[in-house]
Image (tube, rainbow, N blue to C red):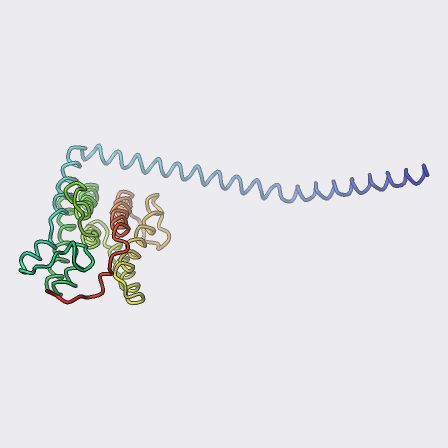
Amino acid sequence: MAKGRGSSRAMSQRIAALLAEILDRSGRRTRPAECERRRSFGNHVRESKDVTSATVNAIMSAVKAVGVGRLLSVALAGYLAGSFPSAEFAQRLSGSTVDLRQDGSGNPGATNVDKLLGHRWAAAVLAADVTKGIVAASTGRRFAGDLGANVAGTSAVLGHCFRRFGRERGGKGVATRYGQLLVTDPRYFVIDFLVAFGVGRLTERGSVALGAAVGTSVVTALPLVSGRSRPLRLGAVDATTAIATIASGVIVLVRFFQERGRPDELRRVPRR
């Protein structure tokens, strides 16, 4: 009996030693790889912090160089330019009795004007809305450089979407944002237009197409804030331009969210 117990104990010890050796060898193989992964992650975190810090410092330096007062001035000018009620102005000139805030989609924008007043008035409103963004961003660039163009252009989109400092609902801001992008970085205009055209043909829903287009340009601008060129390899883009593109896109998407559940603007109704 004692001999059997001794042999069982010896067998258990050998099995334990064998398992320990296997685990030790496995740990030796995985430990370097795990350490390398941790080292790579740490380097990535440090690199991201350095890039973020450099971006913030560059923006603060640009603000100091231009002057806070001048930036506030171009921001206010851009906001007032964007607040011009081009759709309502066209409705009054047309002599129609429709109410753009009640009829059709209820949105005072070019697509609702097209549905209620016709193509000619819609084209005029669209041109006016794009011009608001162009004038605001160009004026901002003239008085405060590229940073001023981004600030004034984004303010124009804000003024178009939220008039009278948020007390009045405006349009969705897509056309005004196009004007901003044509001045600050036309490549984003091309992205928006192509996505809107493709999604519009597939879904035949204007709100879905325009929302997808704006969302796409926002997503493509996110990596560019840190100076990277992914995911579409757009090349070098100033961080403030990328931030302004994201900001104006978010403003437009907020208006799309507020208008959810309303009739789609591609469906026409009889004109009065």
